[in-house]
Image (cartoon, rainbow over all chains, first blue to last red; front, top):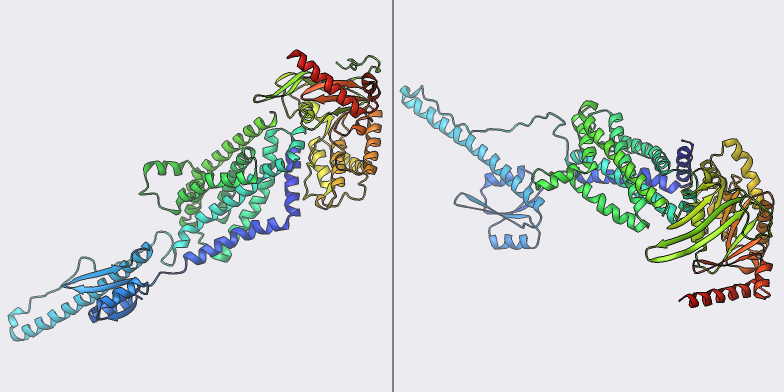
Length: 374
Length: 260
C-alpha cells in the first residue's frame, strides 16, 4: 500500500509542477465541448430557392417557411444559378407536378430543401382546402336560400390529418441536435484526454530511463499499475467534476438526472480509458506508437458509440459496438442526462464499465509483469 | 554461501554479497553472455572493464534482476533470482539519467526512498545526509530540469545510496563528470567499501578501473581476465592497464582460434 501511495503521490507532484498540463486538462475538453454546442445548436438551415412561375399561394407559403426565394420566368436562367451554387434548388410546377431540381452534393441541404418545400406545399394545400370549404359553404347557402328543402344538407371536407402536434416524454421542442449528442461527447472527450495521459505514462518512464530504476525496486507490477490508477484517478475525478459542472452550468447541457451520478459514470469511463492506456503503455515503445494505438483503439469506439444511429448498420457492427466500453458509458450518460434515469436504470451499464476496468487492469499488470524480467 | 571466498586465494575471507555462476544470456540467436562467473565480496570495489557492447550492462541487468539468465544461476544477498526480498538491500545507478526531470531533487529521493520501504522519519534524516555525500546539499529544492549533467549524475547516485544498501551496482557512474567530482565520487565509493558494502562499477575508462580492488575484463560476452591492476599488468608484463587489456584480448582471440 505504501508503494501505491508513493507512486500516486509522485504523479500528483508531477501534475502540480506542470501547470500547462493542468490547464489543458480542464480547458481542453470544456473548450471543445463548447465549440460543439455552438456548432450543433446553430439552428436550422434556410434553403435559398429559385422559383420558376410558381402560383402566388405556394410562393407565399415558401416565404412563410423561411425559405429565401427568387423568382424567374425562365428556367434556363434559374438552372444557371443552381450550377453556380447561388441557389440550393429550382422549383417548377407543370400539370400539378412540382419539380424540385436540387444541387445534390450536400445531403443535409437537399434534406432541408425537401422538408421546407413539403411543409410549404402542405400549408398551401391546407389554405386551399379551407378556401374550397368556404366556397362550397357559400354556394350551398346560396342554394338553400333558393331551394328551402336543401336545408338538412351539410358538406364538410376534412382531411385525414389536419395538424401535427408533438408532445415530449423527455425534453422539449427547444432541444437541439447538440443536446442529444452532448452527453456522448462528454464521455468521448474525457476518454480521449485520459487515454493520452495514461498511454504516455509508462512510455515516458521507459524513454526517460526511470523505468529501469523502478524495475529494480521492490515494487510489484500490480502495485505499479494500482499506483498509476490511484494517481491519475484523483486527477481524473477532479477533471471530470469540473468539466461536467462547466458543461451543465456554463455551456447549458441538458441534465435531467443527478450530477453526482453523471460524475460517477464519467469517472468510470475515465478509469476504463486509464487502464486501457496503461495496457497500451506497457506494449508501446515510443510516444508515436501510443498515438497509433489511440487511432486504432479509440476512434472506432468513438464512431460506434452512439454518435451515429446503428439501427441500420450491419449486425456485426452492432455486435462490435457492444464490445466497446465507450458505448456503455455513452448510453448511461444519455439515460441520465436526457431521460433522468437513476442508479437503478443505469446500474447495469456502470457495472459493465467496471468489468472493463478489471479486465484492463489485469491485462496491464500481466503485460507489465512480462516486461519486468526478460 | 556467505563464507565463500573470493576467487583469488590471497584475498582475505569476506562474505560474498552477489554471486553469478555459468551465466549465459541469449537474445534470439545472439548470445550476449557466454558463461560468466563472478562474485562480489563485501568491502571491495569490483570493476567491470571492457569496450561498449561487450556485455557489461547485460551482466549488471542480470545482477539487479531485470534480465533473467538463459542458463546459469544468479544469487544476490543469499536469494536466488528471481529476486524479491534482496531488492531492498541493493542500490542501483543505471547508465541513463533515470530521474523525474519535472520533480525536485528531494521529491525524486523521497519517491524512490519510499519504494524501498523508508518511513518519513528515515527519509527526513537520510536525504540531507546523502545530498551532502554527493555535494548537492543546497540543491534539494531545485527542479531537476535546472540541473547540469554532472549534478544529475550525482543525484542519480544519491538515489542509489539513499536506503544504505549493502550491495551497490553502478553502471558507468562517472560518465560525463569533471575530474574534480570524479575524484570525490571515488573517495565516496572507497569509504562505502570500507564500511562493508560491496560495489560493482562498470567503466570503460582504464585509469578509473585502476582504483578498483578487483578488475574483471570483459570482451565479447566472456571474462578474459580477473585480478588487481598490479596482478593483471604483471601477468602480461605491461606497464598500463590498457596494454594489459589488449594483451588479454589477443590471448583470448588466440584461444578461440585454436578451439575453432
